[in-house]
Amino acid sequence: MNSKYDIIIVGGGAAGFFTAINLVEKNPKLKVAILERGKEVLTKVKISGGGRCNVTHACFVPNDLVKFYPRGEKELRGPFHQFCSGDTIEWFEKHGIELKIEDDGRMFPVSNSSQTIVDCFLTATQKLGIDILTGQSVQSIFKAPEYWKVQTTTENYSCQNLILTTGSNPKIWEMLANIGHTIIPPVPSLFTFNIGDKRTKDLMGVSAMASVKVKNSKLEASGPLLITHWGMSGPGILRLSAWGARELADKNYQFAIQVNWLNEVTLEEAEEKLKELKLEHSKKVVSKKSPFEFPNRLWENLVLAATISEDTKWADLTKKQLQNLALQLTQGEFQVNGKSTFKEEFVTAGGIDLKEINFKTMESKLHPNLYFAGEIVNIDAITGGFNFQNAWTSGFIVAEAIQ
Image (tube, rainbow, N blue to C red; front, side, top):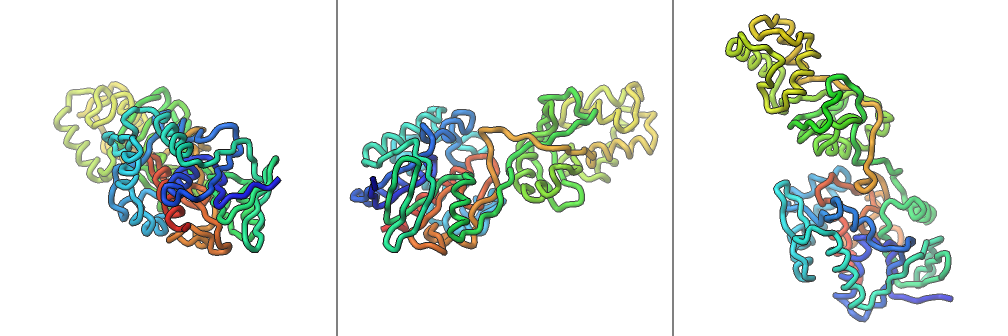
C-alpha cells in the first residue's frame, strides 16, 4: 500500500511538530503526516528542563543569541532575524500558553509543566488534521523524479516535500550519506568532568563562581562551578564542554584544567590581596575562615593544598606559602579523566554539514524538496532553552519556504 501526502515529516519531536503546525496553519489544504519510530511522540519535550520544558531564552537580539551556539553561530544569524525568541513567546501566547522568565533568563511555561507544551502541540495537530503515525521506523528514502518515496517497516509513503527532523539519529544520517550528504560524526556536547582530587573530595554540592581553562588550549569559560561526587559540573563546565566538544573528544577526555576560584582575579592581584589579609588578620588561623566568596570547606582544602598546616596563623605565612596559596586560588590544576552525561540533557555536536544547507529555506542544496529542522544538522547550543529555539526557528523557516 502506498500512502500519498503533500508533505511528510520524519521525527515526532519538537522540530517536527512545530514545522507541521506552522505549515498547515499557513496553508490548511496541505495533507501532512508526521512519522515517528517510537510508540510516543514529543518524549524529549516531556522530560526537558526537569519536566518543566525550557522553551526558549530571554535573549531577544539575533546577534547576541547566536553566541550561545558553538556550532551554527554564523549560519543562524539570518534565521534568527526571521524568527527569534520574541517570536517564540508570541507564537505560544497565540496558542494559549504564557511563558515566564526566570532569573537566569531561561523561559518556561507559567504552568511549570512540559505537559502544557505537549498538549498544545497535540491539540493543534488534531485540530489541523495532521496525521501522527507512530511505530513508523523509516527504512529508506528514495528520490523519484516527481516525488520522494519513504519506506517504513510497515508502509510505503510518497510525498512532494520531505522534511527530516530526526535529531541525532545515526540511521537517518546514514541514509543521507547514501544520497550524497556529508555527515559530521557526532560527539557528546554537554557533559561534566570526572575528576578525582583530594582538594574537592567530600565537597559534593559546593558551588563557586569560577573561570576554567583547558591547559594547552584556547578553551575557557566562566560561570557557576558545582563540585559533584564524580568531579565538576555546573553551567561553567557545561559551557566549556559545549565549546570544546570536538577538541575534548580528540583528547579522549583526558586533559588538565586550571580553575580560578576567584573568577576574574589574576595571580598577582591574589598575591596582593593575601598580603593585605596577612596584615589584617595576623593573629587568626588561615584555614579557619574563607576570606572570599566561596565556602569555608573549599578554602580549607585549598589552604592545605598550598602546604599550609591547619593551625598556621596568617602572621606566620612564608612568602613561598603565600605564593602557593595564590596559585591554588587562581591557577589550581586538576586532571580530568573522562566525562559523564545526563541522559535527558544529552546533546550531540555533529550532523549534516552546514555547507550543504540553504539557511534561507533550510532546504538541502543537493536535493530539491528535502528540508531539515532541529538537531539533525550540525548545530548545537549550551543549555538554557537554546536548542529548542533552534528547533522553533528552523521549523518556522521550513514552513515559510514551502508554498
